[in-house]
Amino acid sequence: MTRAPSPGQTVGPFFHFALPYHGDRALVAPGTPGAVLLHGVVYDGAGAPVPDALVEVWQADPDGAVVQRPGSLRRDGFTFTGFGRCATDPAGRYSFSTLPPGGVDGGLPFFAIAVLARGLLHRLLTRAYLPLPPGVTDPVLTSAGDRAATLVCIADDEGLRFDIRLQGDRETVFLTTPGD
Image 1: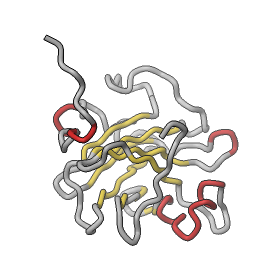
Image 2: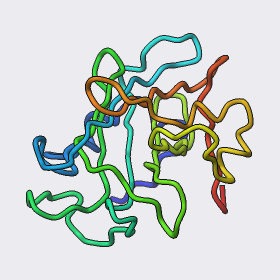
Image 3: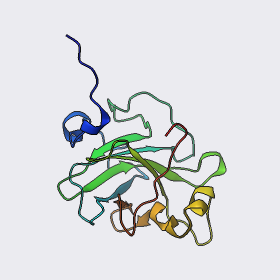
Image 4: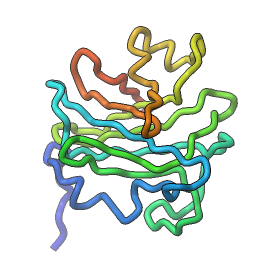
């Protein structure tokens, strides 16, 4: 007996059961020279934490090279693959132990972020730029206008904080890609 795929509307909050894997949030081992903690909270439109979201990160290596090595789903402790996945905890928090990305092709360094959560028919895509000196920008930040700050990490005592707001007054700027 074969089963047809379920429609996107039934995706539900099942991410914690099927998608996390051992080492998913550790792109590098904590304590690795140069490692940073990328962390934050996913909030819904009412400002409440989302306890059952899934955050994915893709990034270049510190030299700005797009990493194309296998091993993201089976970490070997040595290979930096530039991909991680983290289910939010009951307080909506996520975190990744990683390296700061370099800028690709002379662009500004950023983490590419995808968010999956209940009620979303498709993943949401955004960028988390490293903290920027005043006046530094790029086409994506410029197009975000007065909401550009929602795309920039804030350095704090733990590392780099990037909160994701799914709706509301301070909604994170989400991006579309060809085919969306």
